[in-house]
Image (cartoon, rainbow, N blue to C red; front, side):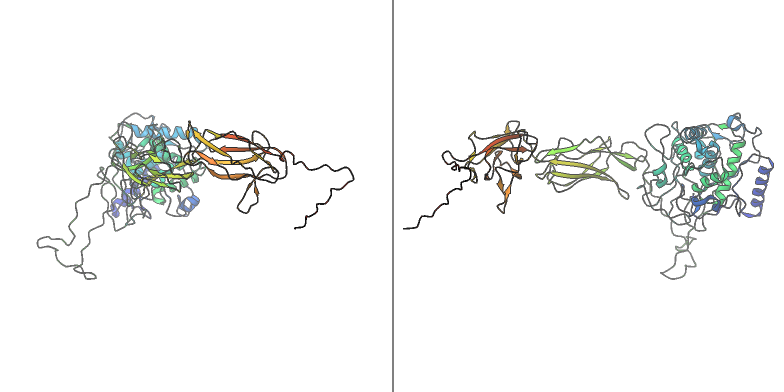
Length: 587
């Protein structure tokens, strides 16, 4: 529960003596306690724990405050019997039924998935005891969820670690600073990585003892630890809260529960009474709903009469009797059921449309509260980003929609622009730490399912000449004119257009050089395309021009190159040379 905290087991000479007697009695009972890792301090030295204690950062609880109550002086009288003892005895020594079941279930689950860890449920019980007194004495509902939620003090740097909000208040209802949450006191950033759904309800709830116990078990087993080895166990505990005193307190309860314990009804457990001591700027006060626990409320200080002046010697108001500022009434905070927690895709399918058309699919999201239930009235902002010209139905690229009672919000229809390509739609909800979903979308070029010549006239040219008749085609889609369809024209060798030709008819580029493929052709508003002029080289024969549209429609057109009839060159006998042409002198 707080960063850089030093525990005081008892205050004053009398309480110190009581604490010493408690420890001595526990040792005299010859309980089979696990051995602490050796170190300069006599055991549990953070240096013995390796990298897990290199700094005060990164602990599961954010080093927030914990309870220092020691086990009862009278230990269970049946060594090795563990929780099989009858449901009798001190409530302080017992573990509430649902909480005990959660610890054991976590041990069994981890034994199946990570048997090398050898996690004992008694270690979870020891941590659960010092963190929350077993969920405030087992005050959980039928599903094992603490009611009300268990929240530690704000980690605002005033006597505790300074941890600014990482969850937008989703788990701890605090959008400014983080707080340790639930029976096992995870800070939100750690829960985001280690949270579990142990009871199969579809939610990872740090206030649920089943979820929290399994998360704690997996966290303790991290880095391939074997908790049957004392040094690994010490590392695990110190990774939870980086304090020697914390380690010794957990070890005391761990040894006690190894000796034995018993089950008690939910809600009948004894609440802890001794929180670890915060820095002088803070004072102990009850945890929410418990009547005990740490608080971050600073002690009142006299207010100066003016900036830089000395405190006023008398009351601030006649008859006030105090120099403390008048306390402000507490402000109500939203409950977890009212707090925005997450944003999810609500089944949005692929976003694809042809240029100029309306997308069949609409972006739909689902907002949940901090408990995982649908949350209504959450503003969700949808934004289109990209260069395709796509907009929402009202012509805007950004719209805001509130979720309904079922937690869903659906963006308006999308209208594809004229530019083919990819773009994104983002959905953003929440303040402080917004949740964002990103959807990829695609605009495809306009398509045609058929293309044909507009006439059947033969296309013939003499070698070295151009074709007198232009090639004109029309593209259609579902028998309607297909406007704006991209067409590729290629001179090919075979009917299927698998092989390009490097001789015969050709187009010309801007510099007048031969070009046998054109890719920048587009049908007009009537779906008609008139090809540029086509020229013939000196190779005679029948050639093919293949036109293909976006969408796969194609047509192959024959082009013939032959010399005009009666203009065939004269044949020359072998060994003879053709007579040279003689110029006719001008008159």
